[in-house]
Image (cartoon, rainbow, N blue to C red; front, side, top):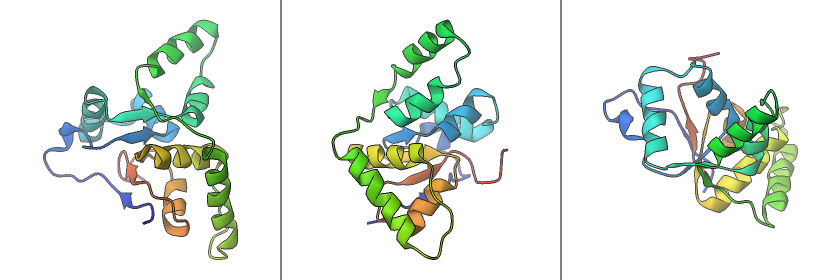
Length: 162
């Protein structure tokens, strides 16, 4: 089975969360933090947090902690991220990310390569049996050109926020 791309629906009921475990990508997280995710997508995200559906993997954690302005902000952010479940990488994470990168390199239909953090996050999500909550075309590239078995979930439709 391959990664399936799912975009949020616009019907009622979206404020109930996503109904499954999702690894959080920095592309979604940053847009939530800076207020670009509003309305139903924000309500759905908040419900997912309350329902403990969101997971944090170390590649995301590193990206998120990079934004800390000083040591105190770093520690506060690290404590905050510690409140999420952990999508633990294993000894299979790096080899799986390399395999995904190989699959992309072998596909002559694409010229875009996926960022290292996204490859690792995708491998962690797959190992945890989770999908990926994002706002990042890289996961569409993975969906269309690899055998990754993790659901791609856009936090809000592509192109709806900067």
